[in-house]
Length: 462
Image 1 (tube, rainbow, N blue to C red):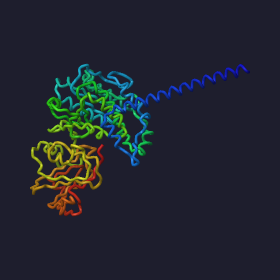
Image 2 (image 1 turned 90 degrees about the vertical axis):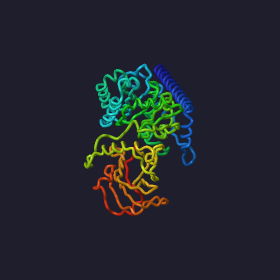
Image 3 (image 1 turned 180 degrees about the horizontal axis):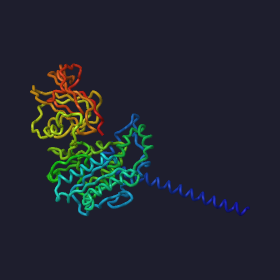
Image 4 (image 1 turned 30 degrees about the vertical axis):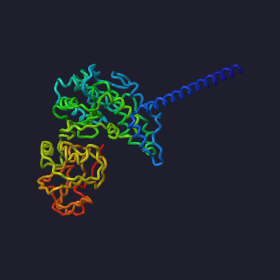
């Protein structure tokens, strides 16, 4: 009996020693991860450090989620990512050994068949508008979202069959995160409100950006991301290459698109830093805010090389094809008459409504800050003979169009109160589109209560 008790105590002692050893090792690993994250934070660009520090709470303290809680998962991206088959990246086609001119990234946020169709249309537009010789100088990266269902595998197989030759040559590459590199959603949601963090989807988007940047950093000289469903201008690749090569001054990014978030050209030498910035501020800055940190910015002065106006026609309008009207607007070489533009909507830098009206009729005004009753007022500086007014607010873009709106005209305007007076004519918007040439939309009625020339309700732009 005494011998059995002795052996039992000896086994219990060994178990306690083992548990204590495991605990000490785990604490050492946590301390190591904290020290590495602190070192990495110190290497982040000064602009983003200042941006994060400037976001203070009411009591003067910085609201940040404790980085050691989440950085170990995020570090997997930069430590384990490879340009080959691995546990992190699943490839259909290996990168070529030759460093090409351009990497074109196309990122899907879901496995929805409609989104996948838009991505294929973009790939088709790229291939259609470039010659065989041009294809040696760019590579297309299709980024699939992390999912555990079979849909993602079917999408990979579809790309492999449809573009087999391009995949085999490495021109088209399909990548996806094969392990859960994201943060804990429950933890993030519980800390979001108290710490004033950005939305869950925006935070995930920042991590996806970092993944895409780190993968693309060694493939080419330059990198650009396109929105699924975009249409490329004819000879866009040659035009872009000539324009970039003509630059003699320093630049951080060049914008070739109508959309302020997509179509930004970066040097791949900067992608490592951009990925680190995205990880460091993933819970604080949206994509637009983070990309706007890189201030040496140029806008392509001619017609945008990438458009997002879809080719389908609305079933609600049958009196003529809207596509023909949009093409007529783009082909028009007339200049809008001088006017003052007023709006209460928040505007993107370099995409202000005045800029679009005065200098760049080939693009759109983008806003993500509006509410019911938001307005746009155009006040002509001199008397004008107006024959036709066409307003297109995204009639072909499902996520960017008016739900309801009014276009009104008048001959009096108070520049102090920014209110139109004696409004005599009104046209109703249909799916974000109005053309004064169509008399069916005209209502001959006086409107003296409308505070501005455009009274609208819009869907949120994401």
